[in-house]
Image (cartoon, rainbow, N blue to C red):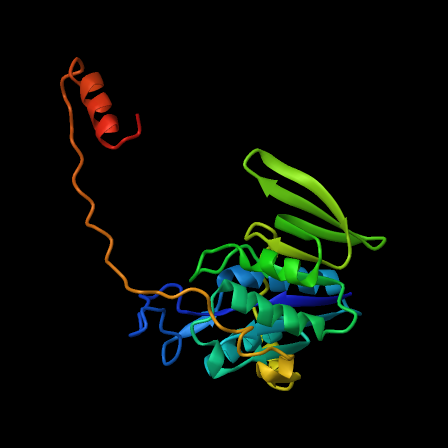
Length: 255
């Protein structure tokens, strides 16, 4: 199987994020890493590809984003594609989806596209679905188990009540949950080999996209700190409690 995995380089998920003058997350000149959620997609791809398949890692971002690809390649991925273009700074989800879909289209004979459920730094949870729509492919979300048999994708889709068994034809786009597997840890050999694996760097023009295609439709106008959490109220009189609860819910316009 030939599998494409969409990965993202994010500022240190355990650190304190820094915001730039454009009110967006600062991504250059800060410590970063492969999004932890994407490691599960890479692991799922490696297991599905086996010894005779190929796993291609795709990312979009500044120069430092190559770190996400190196991590995935050191885990066992076969090649990487990095979209690097100054015009993509501040890209929104739609622009990002257009770029990633254009990269996927260049991967001849791909069988499957895997991605995390949502990025740790963005949390929109909509990018993989947008990519699937642009590629005109079926999309299966929240996969806790992914299998391919007789050319058919079989997924256990995680739900609040358990899981659904879903089947669909290939190729398809699948989002993988953190509970799907335990990502392997790169070995020293894998880290060294990653430096020798193929890595393509593409621009917007290489993908055949116009300036209008990558023009963001969203703009961040400003940021405000979250209001400090106020102390709760303790009601000790059991006879007074029901009335105070109703009063509180009425004031909050819940009832």
